[in-house]
Length: 239
Image 1: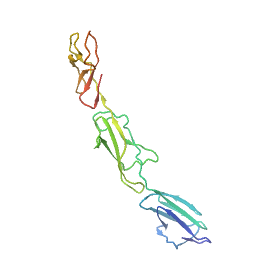
Image 2: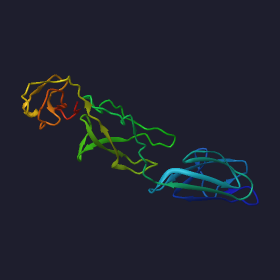
Image 3: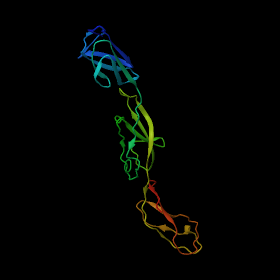
């Protein structure tokens, strides 16, 4: 483009896309005559491998406003060079999940956890879809105690490449502690093993009471160690 001055050239150097030059809404051509002090609008469009995010710089003029893809240039007398460099298209980084580090089984999705995508000034938080896998089998409703792998996907947009089924870590729903009353044991004779004594009691979940070491032979009366073993794997043993 030309300005009304002794050095009438405005040069645009664009890397990674194309640039349209406008006066208002009118597109300017390469032989348009401009004047010092005039303001023109620059609109950048990335190519297929670059993001809609431009780094702008100028020699000989002044950028009075700019965004990722648009800028307003105030023309000055003399030669002006505008540089527009597009960022490479990259894959966004999943910021991670908060709220699942202390999840405990309670019969609901995520147990006592409440997942939320982590924040941060540079975090890409939008448009993620999250799935979980346990033993390679996908589930959208992690309920049972155990460790689940976290997978994320995100569609491509004008800033980032698509992310497809990417593993970004795991989380664990811990077993809930079973609550059991002190059991009652049937009597046995001196010299008999604990295995011959039957334990019974009550607990907040189905299961059975067992001796810690059923091979112990009784030589005198006294307390022996027993535990409650839940029938449901979502519960932890109680001693």
